[in-house]
Amino acid sequence: MLSRILAVLLLAAAGAVSAGKPAPEGTWLLTHVSVIPLDTDEVLQDQDVLIRQGRIASLTPAAEKLRVRGATVIDGRGKFLIPGLVDAHVHIATEGAIRDSKDARIAALPLGEDHAYDRRVLLGFLKAGVTGAANLGGSARSDEDLLWLRTEIAAGRIAGPRLYVGKRINGPRADVVAGSGEAPPSRPESPRTADDGAAAVRAAQQRGYDFIKPYQYLNRETYEAVVGEARRLRLPSTGHLPELGCARCADRESAFAHPLDNIAHAEELARYARSSDFAPRDIDALADEVAARGIGVTPTLITLKTIVHMYTQREVPAVPPGWLALVDPVTRRDWAPPANRYLSEAFRAQEGADTFSIGYDFARLLTRQLWRRGVPLTVGTDAALPGLAFGVSVQQEMFELREIGLSPREVLRAASLNAHRLFAPGSGEGPVRPGRRADLVLLEADPLADIRNVSRVAGVFVHGRWLPAAQIDALLAGLAPHDALLQHALQADGER
Image: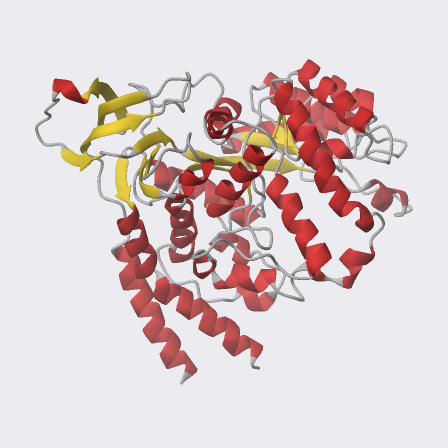
């Protein structure tokens, strides 16, 4: 009986997916819209925006009554056009990650055909106005999935955000090395020498990764080699600061002398404070150092806030209304005990757990000082950390930045232009200007009047294709049978 139900659900899901591919590239004329380019402080009122062959062809005052043969006209009256939002720190769930799962029951889940699981995750980004996402490392098959999906999205065969795919490079923890008796051999997959660290960066470039994510368990010489080789090859770097406190670990001075292009969490900087009491002088010293070195920061404040909630309330915080149904069954399973380590007693018992709340306050104050010093900030979420749904968590992080003092315009820049400047330096992509890629969000209300209006998405242009909110919802609904298939399989497994 179970196999018959799964077969029916699988056929329904496959049929829904075949209808879920984006329309071919066309010509669009968005009329009478207010444009917020973001590369200046201006707002262009009552504009006609022509989009052709995936790019913005022109911005014209509506009074000139632009007419374009064959264009699909979209009425923009009362609406606002902004650059597409970007999640600059995300870990995208993919079918490859499921197949790489150490849980054999998860790895064996029926995933259907035509990347139905991946398509549904990607549509969640678009629903929130997120037209770009930077994945900061995953499992081997997950990375391969993302590199493939990047090509499929760019070719218009799958609807999703523009993907920047990062390669995580990490070594063994210092305590693992110290306690092993004999140090594990170095290799590019887990480098412990400068040569292997540099080789790992070269291999990542040859495979087509967009950027490098150095992780904290690289020893001093290996970390320096990874960062230096990435800079030599002009591969952006964003990641963690190296581990402190061991003979071969970096110290504060060496880490800042070999700076990343971007630090992936404000909490990473908190580890580098010169005292353990979260003093104001530490905030100023860290902010001055980051600004002097020209480093950008992705604060991920919503990540810390969510972890603090789980620690203090012993529950996963509620996602924004209407979004829980879009969280796929595998991710929902990972959010619940025992898979959710943030709800475990071991997590609560770890050394320093009692500083989580003050650490969040420290990160907020530090991020404010970074902003006041002109440090380029980007919006990242660390989704799908428990409680953070793909797409809408970008909006939640934007609200966090607004609450610490950034203006709505500055928040919008952090969520769009700054990310493209980090991951595609020199490309000039991002602002709403002629010649630029048409990755755009149409909003029902003015985000400069209230940043929360970014949640009122009328539709997105992604890779030059128009997807109104209703169509995105319809595509998601068409993939619901696939979700039901996975949910049923997970429940059946749990009942055994």
